Length: 101
Image (cartoon, helix red, strand yellow):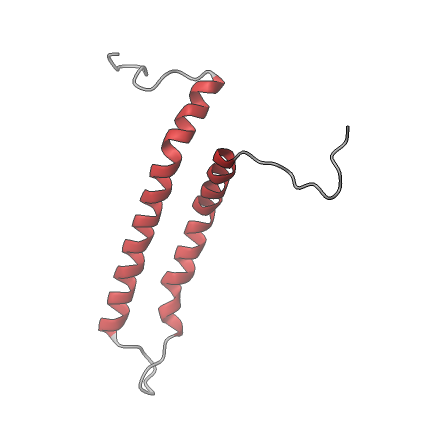
């Protein structure tokens, strides 16, 4: 029986979240590039250049934010990707060449 036009496509919650997190990982470098280039557009107090201190703090905070976002994505995707690798038939973790296990 074909799926009706009015019925939404069902996606499992776990795979949907994993795919969205993977999309976030793909977009994160682009977002980081835009955020890091943004201070070049700043003009404050009628001068041609923004304040060095404000720009430095901004870049440091963006850098820290990108690190935390990448850490969160990696932590969220790690178990899902390991389970997917095991299901496909890859070697279990810790059994690579030169490893005791």
